[in-house]
Image (tube, rainbow over the protein chains, first blue to last red):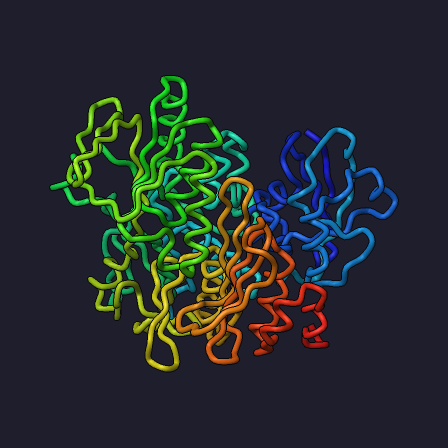
Length: 107
Length: 415
């Protein structure tokens, strides 16, 4: 288990204990975090689980793959250097305490 | 009944029903919300059931769409394992299988669909499995493990998306697979002929046997799930498991018995409204009436989400028509197919990329109007296509064929 903080579009913060190997998207939808749509359920085909990773720690994450980079071109909300698809971020102990913010819109 | 405390009941705890329940809350509805599901599980994701769930790629928790605790925090009452047997719209009451009744002031029907089965004259009861629910998929996953351990093959009946995804999952597990399709090509209702041929080649290349134009004479089952499939041409296939993916029937019986207009699904408008006041419907159980009088039935996650949202707003008196470009996807092996729009009625097409490759898109036109795009491992083409179709922008065939041309440059500036 690793604790991740999700910041909903309203600014509300939710701390969730995420099992190792789960994606941040899976943890967010199971816990009903607002703003993550995840239409494709984690197949990396829909770009509706967009998050902004804490800028101070974005560099600690494994780099996005080619498919994720393609979809990040098409996110609905503003794309930032810290933009990621939460379905592609797997929980590991190294991410403990990470904070991710959810944009205003996904579709 | 205006004195009754507001209580919206949602029948069906799948993707559409869950979306309707949560939309009521996010739209500010503060009456009671009850979400009723006939399965024992809280809302879960169906798409992985034919993919990662069969290959052991995910655990049960990862299928969860909402934990009961998350629903409780939103003051949504979840009743699992509860079956609604009748709807009395005059009395605004539901009759449950345990004999109790539940009153409502607003109702959302999100009852889903049931897989078609082979006629009893062809297949003995229990010889053939179908895949719809989590329990269906778990049983299939268990049988596939046994097939692998005992070196027994899988026979898939139906070359549609579910059947082909199950076939691909089984091949990933190293199981011999034969796919039987009655039509002359795979995915006939969803894809153009050249893409059907492309998928046939894909499955053959990955080691699956494919029988097109297959006629099944009889299937004999044994108690342990093994079965023998007899084809009309005399061939006999022994299988450790037979799975049929031959389409679904919308669950509209509850609505039909209550006098709500149905036509192979509960008829809804673009806001999810049925023919009955205070009753809306969403997801696989519906058929949408189009402005031109025709109908369209979509079975997709996107449709469930969008209609669930519209159905909730409609009950609150807000018309929020669902107008997004339809989209759908299928994962088989390492190939991601994404479909944007509906290609019904297309009369010409252009290909972007090379169909002998594993990344390309087929753009479908009616006249000069772009109406649909099938993308293979081309997520960016797909995402752009949805925007272009929604905005009514049609690239020329020359622009499609020219890989140096940036399709994003056609995108409406506001998007």
